[in-house]
Image (cartoon, rainbow, N blue to C red; front, side, top):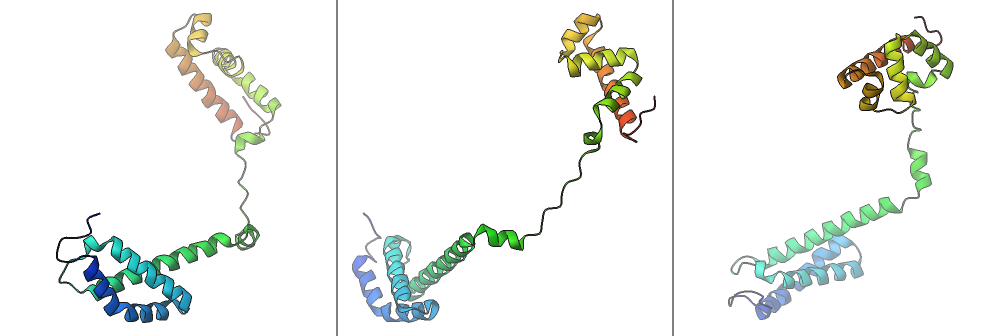
Length: 180
């Protein structure tokens, strides 16, 4: 494995680590507030530094580079812990904090009875009613309807659209009573 060019290698890294280990540990202890966590943070910092030695530019401040790695690792750990705490909260606690869902109002057509629909269908002109029933009730395609009735397919589509519009007009204003 090629670590870095000839100027800065594993031996030089070891020298830098020895020179700054106590400062890294002091900073980690201030951040973590617990000696074991601080030791783990320093260890992870040194491992990451060694793995990324090829990214270090010789002649720059190695101490600052290692402290930057340490701070970023600490922040990553804090984020992971915060996410873990949120995920550990039982669902029951979340349910207590969430407002009750607002029930959705039923669409107007859901309140229409079968009798009201039959009455509205009876108000449709014969040409529209036959095509609507063939398509909606019998499940015939536009082509089948046009062949059975001997009319162009486009006419089937137009009459079906007009039948739906008229049904909507008849049933929407007041579904309790249909007036033709």
